[in-house]
Length: 171
Image (spheres, rainbow, N blue to C red):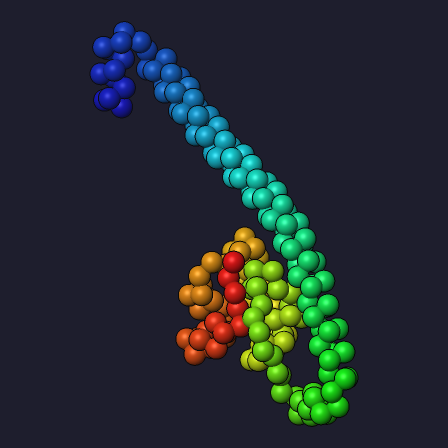
């Protein structure tokens, strides 16, 4: 209380007045802090809405690209099937590969536009790994630019990355 007594003498106020002023200043500081916290929360909410809108636009773009790739890959699959049926020997080899369960894939796929089904055609990628890769691509905003980023996906190490590089094109 010595501080209040000294302050009351210097300001020529009573102890009750100084106590009241102290409470009012305390409430003023508390109100400023609460207002600042609310502002930060509102900013976070606006940032989340902006990110959601951005991902929706990226999702639409990726769906359009995916549809285009799906259409071209379907045409390629049909052409391959027609060629395989013309040549009986190649048709029998294809049937043997299907029965043995081994995947035979020659070529490359654009990773940034590939569907889960297309990824499963690559040797060493099953349904679970394909879903992990699609989820990883979505987390990266729909586009992966470096092969080293694939090391972040569970189940992909350096050896697997080297084999996947043969099949993936990063645009």
